Image 1: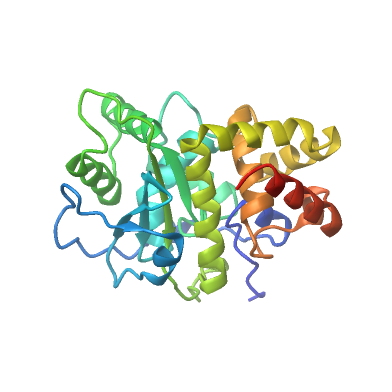
Image 2: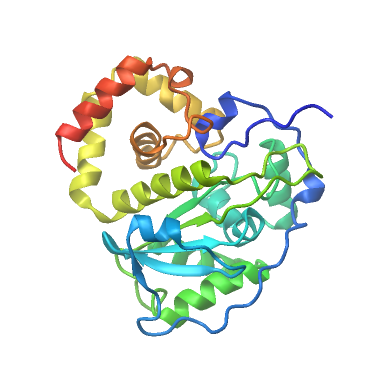
Amino acid sequence: MRKKPATRWVAGLLLVGGCVAAAGWLWRHVPSPPPASHPTGDAWPLLTTEELLERHTQGHWAWARWSEWPDAVVVQFPSLESQGAALNRLAAWKEKGAAPRDRLLDDLALATLIHTAGDNAATFYGGHDYRLQDVQAFFDHARKQHVTLNPEEHRIQETLHAQGWLPVGSSPGVRALISFSDLQGDNPGTQHDETVDALRRESVLRHELSHARFFLDAQYRERCHTFWHQALTPTERQTIQSRLSEAGYDVGQPELIVNEAQALLFHTRDPRAFVPHSFGLSPERLKALREQFARQGP
C-alpha cells in the first residue's frame, strides 16, 4: 500500500496530496459516549484559546464558549469520526459547490459526495464553522424534508436547544458554532490520513476561531472584504478562488470565499494545510500581506 497522503483539512490540502476514496469508512465511526448531562443555563465554561487547547475531551464532547467572543460556542469532539457524523451533512449543504442549497443530502448522496471528493467521513473536514442562523435553517430543512438525521446530528440540535442557543420559533441571533477535534492517531485501515497531532489540532482551532470572529465582528469582517478587494491583485484573487473551487467550495458565495481566504492566509500555520505557492503566493509576498493586514487592526 502506498504511503498515505496528507489529509485535506482545509482547501490547501488538495494541492499537497491526493487521497484514494474509501467509502466503506464513511459511517464506520466510533460512537461518542453520551454526555453526563445536557448543558443548561451557564454550564458552558468561558475559555481562552490557550485554555481550549489545554482542554481534552476524555472521550466526551466538550462544549465551551470562546472568551474573546462569547457568542461563539466551540465543540471539541473526541474524534474526527464523531465530528464528521455530527456536521458533515451541514457542511455539504452550506459550503460545497456540488451540493444543492435548497435541500439536504440523504446518507447515500452525502456518502457519494465525500467519496467523489477523495475523502472519508473523518477527513472531509478538519473543523467546522457556522452562523447559528444557518444551523437553525439546516434543522428546519431536515424537518420540512423529512430527512432522517443521525444520532450525532440530533445531539447537536438537542444540546443547542437545551442551552437556549436554538430557540424554538425565534432567531438565535448573531452567534456562531465552531468545532475541532482532540488528538488522535491514524486509522491504518484506510488510505487517508486521520492523524490529528498537536500542530494540526492548534492550526485547525485557530483557523476555525477566525471564522467565528468573521461571523461576529462586523469591523473585522469589513476589514477582510476590503483586504480581499484592495490588497490582493486580481490574479491573486482568481488563483485563490480557483483553488477553493478545486477543494469543492461553492465559489458562488463571495462571503464564503473571503472568509476562507482570511482564515487560510492569516490563521493557518500548519504547512500541511496551507502551501502559499499553491495559491500563487511566494513566502515573501505572504509575509508582506500578513504584515499589512496586521497593521490594519488586531
